[in-house]
Image (cartoon, rainbow, N blue to C red; front, side, top):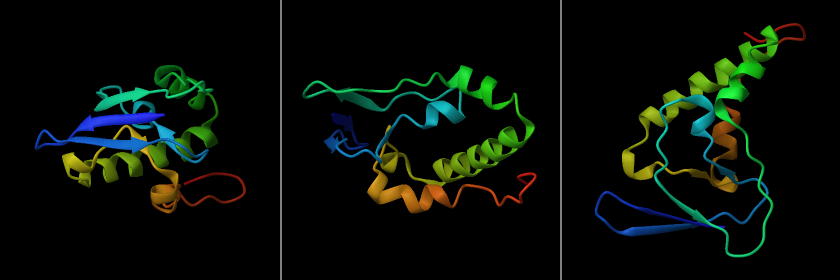
Length: 115
């Protein structure tokens, strides 16, 4: 998959989604107002999994422990997104580059409940 976006200087930037750990459009899960920044094109036949943000939130809210964990992650993710300069934002999370960062957004949990 080829992802293309324009940076703030009007220069086209290309990212390749080529690994199982890459995520596409994760911000859609955490904010209803996300606007895609670029275009994603399949260069060959591929399989994608579509998760609807609104339904995802409704389903996560059905279980208090899950809702607590996911809400904590979402708050940390959005705080990080808001701290990143506009030109560094992307619809693609390159797993090899951000997986350790994203894992830090998961709140601490005990056996019975996530705080």
